[in-house]
Length: 209
Image 1 (cartoon, one colour):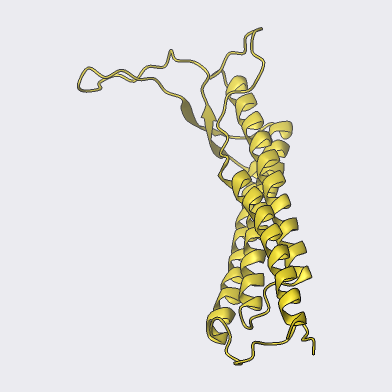
Image 2: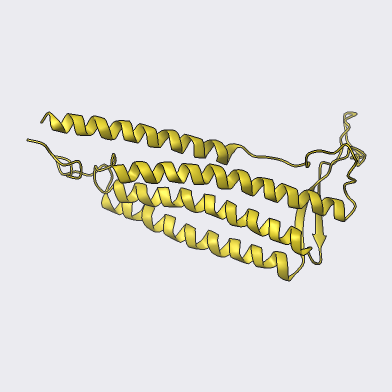
């Protein structure tokens, strides 16, 4: 007799309690609303009022003085307040913030899915595999493109206010790229592959029952 992969465990006991699973779902939903509201507010601020941004500095001439132990150093970033952002740079920062928020929402969606699935033992499903893989790809792509747009905008603003001087030899922008979100997206894609493998094993095992 073949069992469906959507049936609950034989002992009827879920992996976690329903209260814990419900808490995960509620917490992820609340976090999604809160972070989205904050992102929308931040994007509006790029177009409507003064903006304080940390801009990359592409020169070592801004040295830090007064350091102890004969240490030397120079500034690599500048916190600048601009009364109004140029439209082009504001748009780039807005797209970067939106893409970053998309990455956050994909993670929260996975937490919601985890809470929903953990209410029972049904984890290795085709839908779960597709959702995890899609979320991983979206997280990796959105985070990478968002960071590039953000750093391009900040580099251009640093040039506009005179903090950076572009030379003829400049080819790439100066900035920082955090690979954590990109790697997390890749890991999620791999996890989707593991889930697919587990789902097939589960089907094969239940087919023998």
